Image (cartoon, rainbow, N blue to C red):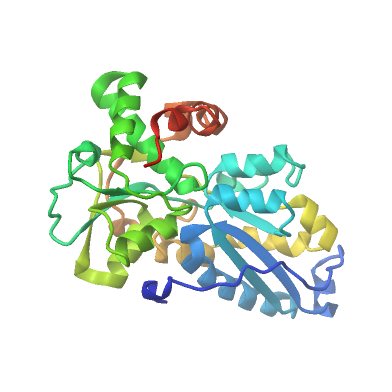
Length: 342
């Protein structure tokens, strides 16, 4: 898989396929091939390419039925809006719970209890936010406060459309709040940081391409898995810098109730998500630079690849996503107040 060719080109297709009967597993062997659509956020492309192949093999062996899982990727907020507008996603694997909650509030696409239906608050993997710099770290970037220095060009996506960008924003905010004392100082810090941002892409993968392929910026604020993928693909061209403090990102997954009930795909869609929690699923997660949430075996296997960072949660620092969205990313929130498009 090559980052140099826009990473992976996966068609954005609506899902079509035969309906499944609601009877027990033996009935699946009698069914025609089925197609699911997984609507996800930007940096999960490689993860789900490998995972989908593994699940298809598992499902074929268990039921005799062929399954194809299509993938759709983009900024998490934008992807949520696509589902609300009618994109027939069987499952949504978005960057943050707030985007999934939007599917509850806008049309009832997902049931309110969605986060209680799978282990670990329906988050089979976690991640965090790190900094990526060019070879040799010519600007001497060591922590968040280096991003506001004059002459430092920072690449990060748009918090209005990207879930990753919101994690980036809140990680930097909390750092500044702790170091300089209070939300007012944090807001000043974020204003300076975005004053050093030359362009806002709509999603995390777009920002990675801007930084890595188009050569813009001195530092990329990135998902941890995206940073390691860059390092793996380009080798010595980039270095990963672990900041002193960052946020524990907990991407969540769910079936899209309205769609699976309409298409008759609930049973297989639920099994698809449950497979993320199996030993094979958790191993694939770690292999693709996400932090396995459940499997101790996978956690131990991949522990050395993850830096030790002081992590805080969205609940601890911001009172949860509903509060954070309202204060920072809704119309008139802190981002709108500090950001002036150049």
